[in-house]
Image 1 (tube, rainbow, N blue to C red):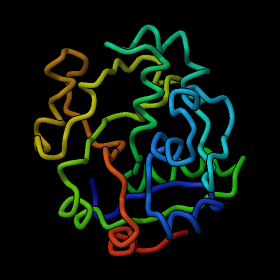
Image 2: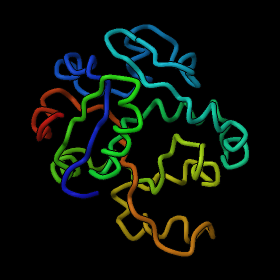
Image 3: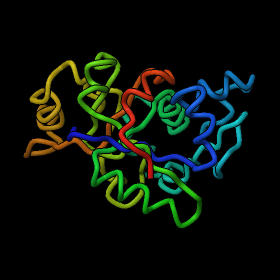
Length: 197
């Protein structure tokens, strides 16, 4: 995963993140008494309580591809499972992701200590070789299902060979995306935070 991981968010979210920690979109919706099913497949950024959620246009713009490459999911159910996760990026990928959205939104990047994160909540960390929410461009050809997310606890070799074993690739994968299946509490976030840009 590298030594640091990036979480990219709207700058307007920083104040609430420091108070309540990092929480997935579905939890933010439930906390605001909004049915989390209704926020999936959003075509614009959405304000929920004190948080601004990113849009899910990479699913909507790649809808035909999503129907073709998803295993065991519809585009809507995939969007819903994305909303149950917090997404982090290895340094280079994090900078690229930030650059892709900062043209439209004032963003901040929280840089977290990957080693401390793994020690604290390693049982809730999944690795992915792709941006699992993107069905456009190269993502239009990347098959995915629940099997795409390999738990950190399964080990790096299991992750690297996951798509090879399925006959989807010939060479081992590298980590592109890291996701959490749990929130990060404010006190833990303070311990993990190296800096924010």
